[in-house]
Length: 331
Length: 256
Image (cartoon, rainbow over all chains, first blue to last red; front, side, top):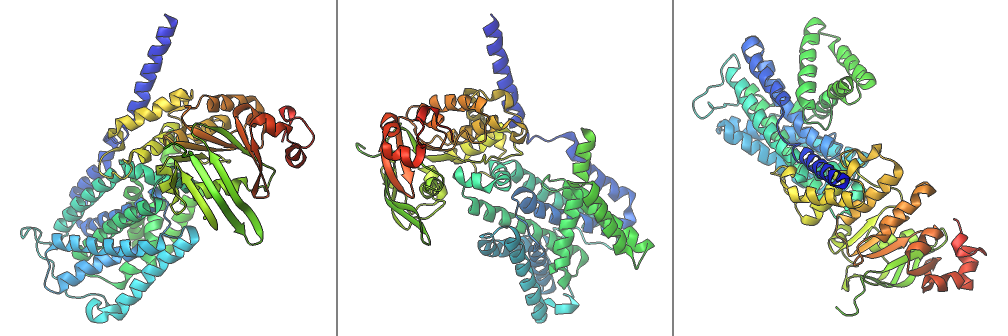
């Protein structure tokens, strides 16, 4: 009889363990929070909608960086290359007679994915510091190319004269930024949904394996280089979508979209929120951008000092970012 | 195949500058073998493992798995042919659970790891197999704990479980009990003894107690070449081996 009991506990322990493992991808109520907050912000802060759209689009950019940095462990200082490629693609289309926004987004994503795939073929052969430098080089090259090709990009002055058509021919981009906000929110939602699917798929789990121990991944026969290239390309496409969003909603593209500032800034925002957890972007980006907005109003000259101070505090006391801190408090 | 060994090397050579780490090594690991590769430090054991797994490229010679040449194949392609290994220093996904560690290996073997659209939890069979493997090694209780929270001896066992998840024909165990307190060495030896008989096992070690307990055939490697090969009794009695490797002590009592 005792053995029978033991066997039964074994069976239920087994079912429990397998169940807990198999259900990790299910949605939890807390995951609705960012969306509820974004919808509430639309109603509560009508005069801040342009900033809000920027934040939403930048969250998508940070999310794309999280896929490579947080999940696959690819350190990059050149993610702006994809953001900028998306922005310029959508921008140049809209400035040259094709202002249809949805196809503009897809074009931006496709162009960025192509740049990601081609540069990934080369840079992903390396890791660590060498990889960091190479990603930086790719972004710098594109930055310089955009600067030189001023006949099409506007060079240092930025791309002027974009004409973005109404979405589906129905929703005009209005002065208050309502359409832009909803547009960014919907695109971010779709991007997040896709990223979440990838992260929870066997492919996504294998990326975590690559981050945790490349040596072991090779030893279990995983095509590590190919996996890294695939996620790098997906991430580039999302970053390009984000760039295209910002181009379409601000109707302007400058060289800043390809700058080291942009690459570094998104990492800072991601680190503030928490790396490798999908929701770090949703916390870090609003925190950083709202703080930047407030500080620059109160202290127009020295606002960067306060941003710096915020960073120092996060690095000193909040390893794992805000989400890491929340984890520790919960325990 | 009649005379295909599970693993074979033919005239395998590798040098680092003037240092010959593999000097025309002809080696056969028969199907279902329990074979040990021993040798003093610097004999070229680790280089041999790296050559066989594909981490190192040989200067000359051939490597065959199951009778088919794999010399030009990548590490992961050799894994697909049935070659699995464990590491001298535990190499696991440290922050992931034991169950996830094994699941990743099985997902690779089953070819589901390239699926990027559906949740990993949908591949129920993979998870069930991983759990069954942990159960078989008496690790079920630790299934949902991150491996870096487990005792080192348990981590060594998970290392073996991950390799078994690949359903190998050839299993290379690189010092399976290294770093484990001697009280737990027996546990690991017990697991190796209970491995499925159709897997060819090559143990690379210098723990003589373990080697003489597990191996039915021993190859002694010295300075990159095979000094002698034979059953344990022959090796223990070989005067050459005693001189270069075992010292003057009897093998049963020898310590590293």
